[in-house]
Length: 146
Image 1 (cartoon, one colour):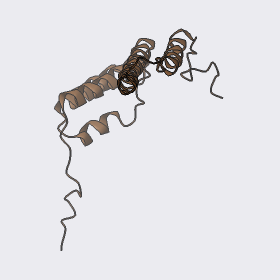
Image 2: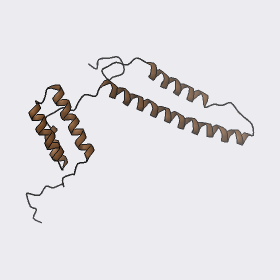
Image 3: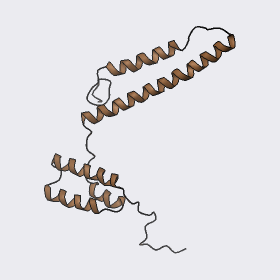
Image 4: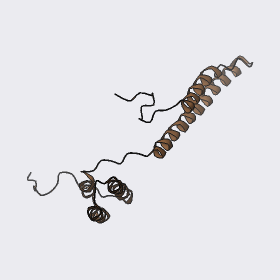
């Protein structure tokens, strides 16, 4: 089997508008940080808008670091994760309450609502996470990460 050496082994992946937007965000951050001057930024933006494959976009941002998330972006991400934990808690509430309910029906009487202990501890941990002071370095434990 003879392979043409000019043909790539994997096909190029076409980019979406969202991919272009991410690349444009990296280019805008690089301009704001002084990593690119205005003419080079303009040239790369035009090339990004014309890009058809991920390789085309990758070449435009390969020498630039990803932008550092802002405090607001970190806070939004933390809030989304915290709310997701409460959804898991709610799922635990439903499952444990169902187990308790089935057990009560089997015994023919209401028994002690035992899910209150694990659910209470879980909720206390989630509330502590919400009010515990956080460090700005991303560790969340107050250390500097050294």
